[in-house]
Length: 113
Length: 110
Image (tube, rainbow over all chains, first blue to last red):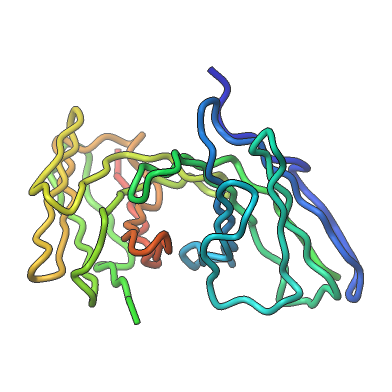
């Protein structure tokens, strides 16, 4: 049973560029959440997608956007990259019911230079 | 606004000792609380999930308790091993927003 997968593993971008990160949920899961984890900090909730709609959003600017596809996979897009966007981006999947256990992928390490 | 605090920030203990990690949260209206382990540069591994109606959960050498009314949870690790060295994070789930603490960095000394 495949767990949560994310691609790419590492990414280096320049300020002002745009980036797309990808996530495939655990088999049977229909909900995907995205998190940003800066070095030495706990993950910060970006948003959650369910039934191809953004169900909940954290305190992140509109430069951060996402999408969920009919097969439940998801993309995180970040526009106009800033140095402060350098972080580990984590994807988690769960079942649609609120309060279900979150399963995390290995993350994508984004470095903005 | 929900805030999650973990104490201590770092902990070093000799192998074989039992230890307790603490997590506190400011808003008791939560769906559940989840404990995770994170190895350096890696993703999160779920250890235990406690629903809001539960008081504790156990898995092997791990036991997590939840006191929702006081906004506290503890993770008890019995007979610690060097392989337990990692960062331990707690997270509370409310309204599908999962709020994490900053974690406790645990180092088990051989």
